[in-house]
Length: 156
Image 1 (cartoon, rainbow, N blue to C red):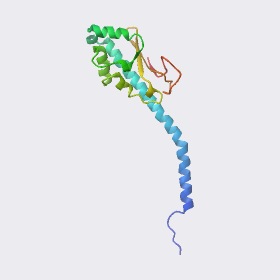
Image 2: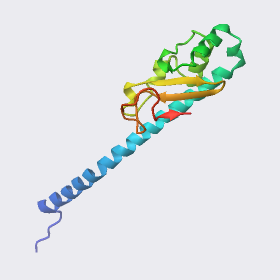
Image 3: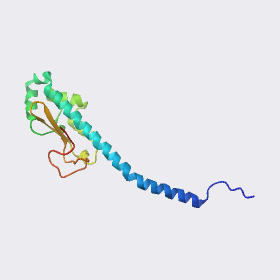
Image 4: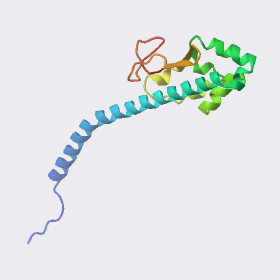
């Protein structure tokens, strides 16, 4: 009696080929979901920046410092988050404290989507309490686009 236990070489090759086909089909879908997650993370960062700037603009302690009021007035035109430095004014320090970073450049380093990583977050105070926040040069998928100024990764 011949008592063979195990798999033949042909059976193993067939199983490996089936697994390779499955990986080939699933990998693009996985990559797409990872990029969606990164874009969502960047949108969350923009929302956090909006909250931090709004809080700083409305904080009575910040408004009691003349240099902070002057700084907030410059925020009525578009500002790069990387231009915010610690200790310059109470307004800037308040924004950085709310973000939990030591400089605006450190906050920009948290960007994850493919196009956003080489760009930065910008913001603008519009009116008395509205803040617009966007990631420069990206489209709504987080990839580099031909958009200048306001992009679609945008928190209003």
